[in-house]
Image 1 (cartoon, rainbow, N blue to C red):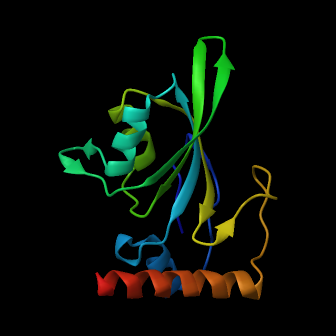
Image 2: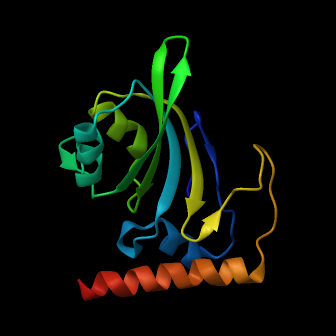
Length: 152
C-alpha cells in the first residue's frame, strides 16, 4: 500500500487484505498521506498557498492539500526549506510534481504517515508487524473517509 518511487523513502504498508489496500490507496476514500519534503530554495507564502489550493500537473489540477512550512535549512548551494505536505489523492510522483510546479524541486521526500499510522520509530530499511489496534485504526480511517465522501 502506497508504493514509493526510487528516490523516496518512508512508510509503506504490506498487506494481504486486498479490500483494505484498495481503500487506503483509492482517492475516493480520502485517506491522508503525509510527507516531509525538503525543497530547493524557500517557497514564498504565495507559493505555499498555491500548493494548498492545488496546482496544475499535466493539465489537471491537484486536489487541495494541507501544507505546513516547518523550517529553513542551510545548504552549500543556498537555503532550502522543509515542508510537511498532506495529500488525499495519489498520482504518480504527485508531491514532487507539485513542488516543481511552484519552482521548488524536491531534494528529499519521506512519507511519514498513512491515515492514522506514523513511522516515527522506524529507521530506513526496518519493518515491523502492525498491532491489531493499528490495523483496526486503518480500517476505520478508510471507512470514515469514504462515508464523509458520500455526504458531500
